[in-house]
Image 1 (cartoon, rainbow, N blue to C red):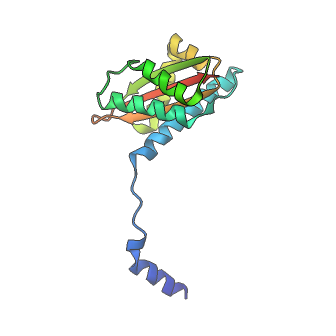
Image 2: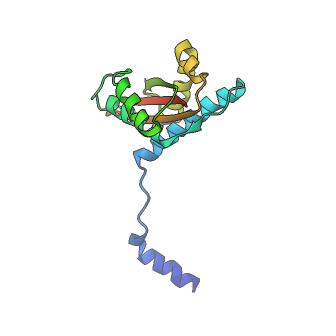
Image 3: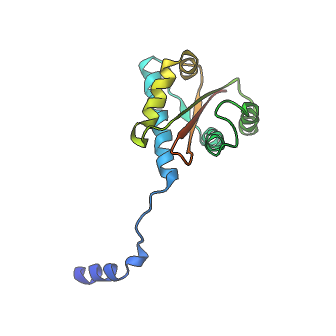
Length: 156
């Protein structure tokens, strides 16, 4: 019976197509890696863990994608629109922070070097250490393999 099942699976291989690597999977892994690094830093410094919020991540991802597609320059352009998008979901909040980065490190090192760069910059580090409760990370990549990172931080 086992041999027949193996033969049947071999003959019907089209029913099980090989899994393809989707860019979203790689981007999600980078997003989670950066999220974990930031929370590890916060824990080591006696700060509460940030909870991940998919609405914030979607907004962050949109900005990263806009920068990667050159629809907006690298930077905080459009911040007011992101604030309004956050307001639509959360109605009220006391603070919203944003850290941005870009690099062309290979994927296995990209998020780590973003994290190190943010820690080396007082303004970015202050945001990481801020009195925020929620966060979301968005990553996109341009045609030249440059990664764009946006991390939003929210205090209710």
